[in-house]
Length: 172
Image 1 (cartoon, rainbow, N blue to C red):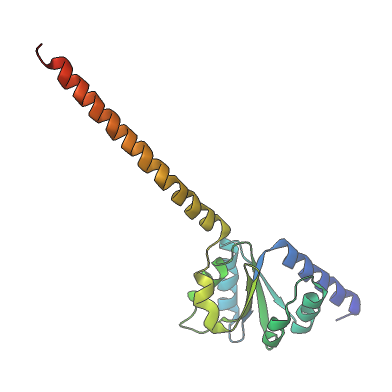
Image 2 (tube, rainbow, N blue to C red):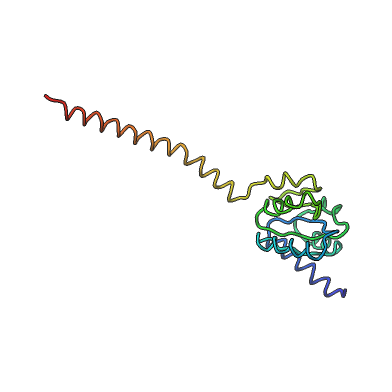
């Protein structure tokens, strides 16, 4: 591969790391063409960008980045595919479907501004909540007391209405 092509690949990887907030490094050794195609199809359906890269080029892209990816360097061995995603837990949930087969295996991940190294972190990554999920939970928690107050006011209004109706129907 010519130096110009390598430089282009490094720049493209750097752009993808800026474009996508999260990425997973996956060992795709042992996947045949059909399994790789199926994995790519599932990634596409879940809005995950899958790129197979050379470890040296990925290492250089990491070094050129503003973020310190040093803990991930040890995972750059063997065949590596990078799964880029804007939602932290989606690639982990996809990889959990393959846990029984052991292929593809998680090497490392960068999710929610944290680095996870090792296949044992897959459950932890799958349990991460996306920004939208956290916001939805906070909104629901904030709405709950308001709903209780409105409900209490409505039941109080019904009680007052019932008392007034009873008093109005009572003979004088």
